[in-house]
Image (cartoon, rainbow, N blue to C red; front, side, top):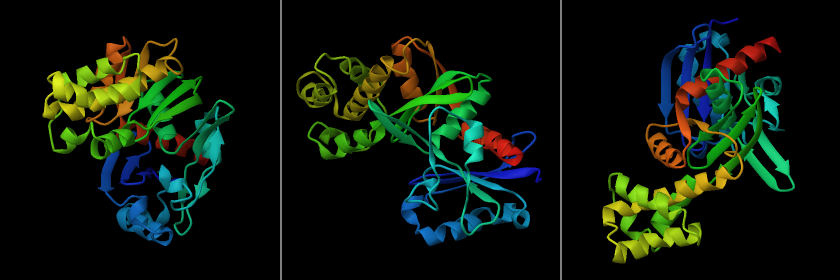
Amino acid sequence: MSERLIAIDWGTSNFRAFLVDRHSGECLETVRSDAGLRALTTAEFPHYCESQVGRWREGGKVPVYLSGMVGSARGWSEAPQLEVPAAAEDLAANVVAAPGLDNAWIVPGLKVVRDDHVDVMRGEEIQAFGALALAERDSAVCCLPGTHSKWARLEQASLVDFSTAMTGELFHAVRFHTLPGEPARGEHPHSKKGFAQGLAAAQHPAGVLHALFEARSRHLYAGLATHEVASFLSGVLIGSEILAQRGSLLSHIDEVLLVGSSGLNPLYRQALEMHQFSVREIDSDAATLAGLLALAERHQTV
């Protein structure tokens, strides 16, 4: 067995590869690019992957584990989406060999299929399991912010339920394709004041559809400055996301594992703390590495 492994998170718009020491979990080298799924045809995936990490592979001895949308029907090769509840062992038992590249494995995603709730994820499940390991816990609720934010509940080391919010994608759509978003189309730094106003507006009894429109009415008549509009819209959407989760995955808990980037984590922390949740931040790269390392050990056992 190689002393190293290669962990890859390959999504719609980004490629991230890490050379990892199996024993220490230390990241030895990193490669990042914008060559996501949209940039490649199916036939190009193995060649691109080899071009990026081939120098680490020692002739194929170092295994490659890939998570994210690379395992979707639009990606390299489709891996199954397992129904919850599922543990890391279940993911390890269902990895798919990546066509065209020896000793490379694509990790399954997860799905929820119930009468009242249908949802899917690819990649975030690895980060959730990794966050759980880094937090040295077997149960938690994880918030994974992004274009499609995920909320996952884990119990006894199994991911038992999750929910997706289109917060990032909707923010972009409102900002660039609606009347209330017009003032926000320029480049403006984050406004703590505008964001806080948006969080407060998210609690309006008329709901999120009205709260978003307040970006325009407040800009016209209540002193919301042009440079504050984007932050206001962000506050409305993130605030609404957390309000929705309070009645479901966030019920009966007081701490959230926040697994995200340096750009989004502070916004979600502010919103969660406003609702009296304590927050433990975990870097998304570290969670990906920990999750794929744990899965690789289980896969070798399988």
